[in-house]
Length: 67
Image (cartoon, rainbow, N blue to C red):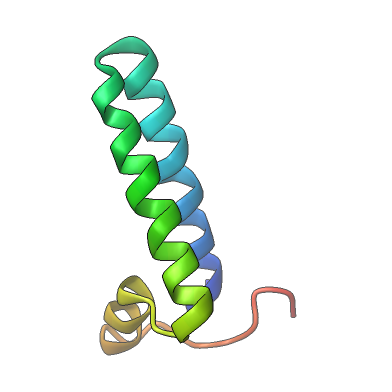
């Protein structure tokens, strides 16, 4: 897997986790989804993604998510 695919996978899973936890536990879990969405928006504007940075440092191969 490439960095882009892992970032998309983790972001999607975090949003789904946020929705599930808010439904079954406490609505305050929606703030996790808000945080993930804000981070995705920030990443789109600035080009910096903390998870991608950590994955690259860990040696995960870079590449396009659509190739």
